[in-house]
Amino acid sequence: MITWLHIRQDITPQDEAALICFLLLAAVSLTEAVGLASYATFSEYHNLDREVSILKKVCSKFNILLLIMFMTCLIASICAFYSVRLVHNNLMVKIPMSIQTFCAATIELSYMQYSWIRSKKIVEHFHSETFVRVITFTVKVAPLLYYGQVVLFVLAAATGISVMVPINRIWTAVSGVWTITFDIFPLSVFCKFLFRQESDIQVSLSLNETASTNSNQLPSNCVQNLEQNLAIMKKLKSFKTIARHGIWACCFFFSAVVIFALELLLHLDIWVNVFQAIVYILLNFSGLCLLVMKIRLDIGRKHIVKVKQLTAGDCSTAVIAVDDCK
Image 1 (cartoon, rainbow, N blue to C red):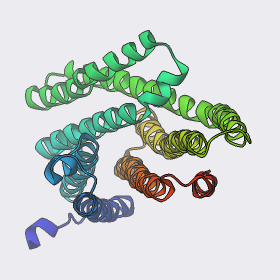
Image 2: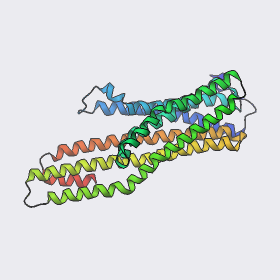
Image 3: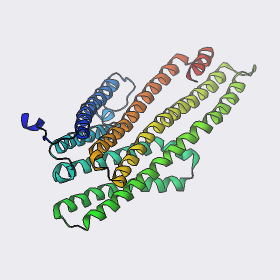
Image 4: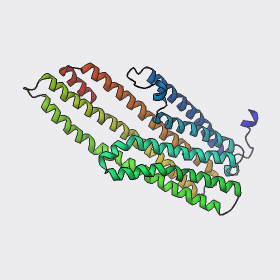
């Protein structure tokens, strides 16, 4: 343990700050991973409406992707701390840096997969089926781009061939451009949704409410129309939650890529580890936004289920319930 915490004597204040950031980030990432696992287990244990086993629900693709993001952020932070405490230029510590590169690629890929799965239904509302298929295909081939960067880094570190270094940097730049391009796309879709979609759905609500207030309408039809309104509001609230938290996640992720690019372009050697710490922190914040999105979607889903149970067959109660969901 003492050897693990031993720090070189020529360490700079900037590297000391980076070490503190890496330690704090490791603790936060571990807390997030444990919190996610605990929340998912507790939530599904008390979910009486589940149709599959608790294990299958807890190990859903969304939970797995988030858990991967937090765990790889934890591993990357530990490797970064280990490297920086030994040398200023942690590229010299080949094995930990290779692990960091792999973790960074995994975080980017997990973020992309999660973001696309969550935003796909919103994208389908604004774009053609062909366009959606193209984006889906690019997401599927993204592992080749991200993990190709890892392979090139490992080859450059293992062989020491000088030409591998610029090739790796070019590949990294291409990956960065692709990541920014993909990040801007869902960001624009989320903003477009928040500006346009709510007014469109409110029109649908007003039409249904007009029909439900018809004096010649039977109570059963009244409840049916209000249930339709409830379904519309459920869709609206879910999409708004995805859009709002998606915007924050995109902004943090975009900032991480930009800061990483600035560090490569400006060659601020004395600040390199601080830049690296900031990048990991922003990536973690992006994952945290996705976690909050998941929790709020779960809460909204449970609220809708409760409302449906309370409004079954009662038109007056259904009216109040729909108003509460707006």
